[in-house]
Image (cartoon, rainbow, N blue to C red):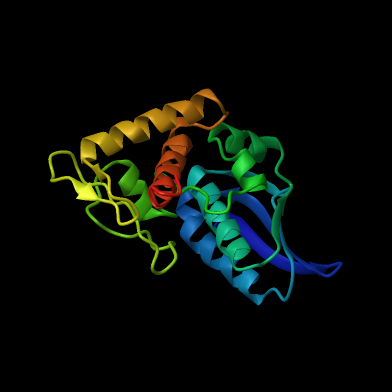
Amino acid sequence: MSVTTRATRRAGATVITVEGELANADVVAWRQALNEHVEAAPGPVVVDLSALSGWGTQAQAVLLQLLRHERAAGRVVSVTGLNGAVARQAHESGMTNLLIRPPGRGPGWLTGLAFPALANRARGTVPAARDHDEEPGTPALQPRATGEPPMTSTASSHRVTGTQYQRRVDLATQALVDHSELSEAVARVLAVHVLDAVDRIPERVR
């Protein structure tokens, strides 16, 4: 690999330093190394990117997935050293704010590396299926490709066709792009996630 990942203990925290250039071809091995360091850390974790010279969208998605997963488990994980070319590349992909302040159940990525089911759902190509990172027992709205019979969300009584769902995704995506610095790719996946969350709210509460 053209990138190295090492962990050191500093002031009660585990600092994971990423050094070199992180190409998409290195992402799978890097994700494994990153996970091993995080799992072995006894306390707070800081991912230091100051020695990283460049990275792609797949690597950014892996780091975002790690942050979401660990924070959901109650771990303290943060990112530092997001500057130079690394910061510019994250800004171009719309990931800067997500990496600094990840949402509680943040978006997947259209590459399908981090969240394949959610990425396919955004493209409208997945039949009824649950994202692997959703909580057990959580009802999910599952859009189907255009032309298939309408379906019913388990969280409400309204029926949604594939065409209607795609229209809602398009409108939500455009609204996010218009009112934020997110790229269209990130905005589309975030729109899918938000719409799914809204559809789980019982109508009597809405």
